[in-house]
Image (cartoon, rainbow, N blue to C red; front, side):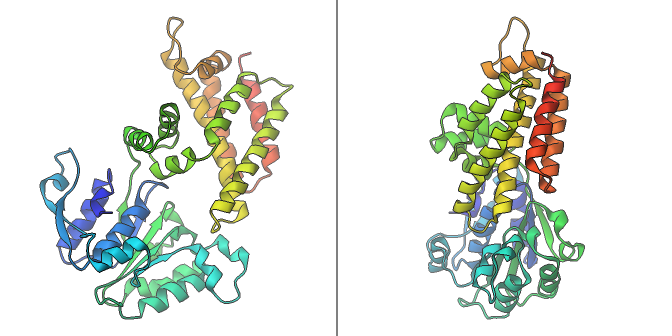
Length: 372
């Protein structure tokens, strides 16, 4: 793959290229932005370029008249031995740092997966950064989910960030840069990544075999996060969403608690599958992720219902009959209140409040605001 294949992030690519061309490239970067918008992908390809022994020049693939489209930019050749080693995932000078590496430290305990521990930072970054690059060009460290570093780990990393060994580059990847210490942020150059266009996400999903209807839903649901859309499109969440629409359409006080329990159970089942596929994630993290996705589906459903109420009249009908049915049950005001209540519930989920009580309270609040 190529640096220039990281599409729709022209600002990030241009910032890195400009620093490289100036011969004054910072040794420490923070790649920040929403989850699934290409931060880790560009970091890996940028690391590949830094290690490439025969860089080439190519034009950025864009139809705009931006500066990127008007000049040749540096790119990895994909042909040299270094590029092939990176592509194979075993280049000795490219280090991907994740929480899961704690498994290979002394006295490992599963509870340590919650944070990117000081043990991982010391053993796999600080000590390794002091070694001479195996291939003589550079040594690149990509710290994924950098916001999960413990305070001790961040403090331990400060000296390496401020005075890194020659030809050592450290890229911190985060979706929550506010959780990094000010002392860490001040020692790194920030590179911002924005959400990707919905039409671009839709085209990518369809190109990978996702059915048209599902592609349209995930492109709208994921708010510019292609990585999230690709991951969710491979699960059964779309089918669960259809079940959820049916239950919301028939919601009554008699079925409210049943729906709340169904949501809790579905989130639990989904999280168990997710935890098996992502061993670096703790069971609690997987559970909160599952609960959040179902809450986001609820919020998205009421947002779509609100949109439907705004654009549809008696002479027009919604593209989704289930949404049209909900629009007859919930006014625009009720939908707005439902979205606010759902977002508030998601914040409480992240604070470890009892999920069963939260879902029950939320569904009952939907009923209070329903018109019928």
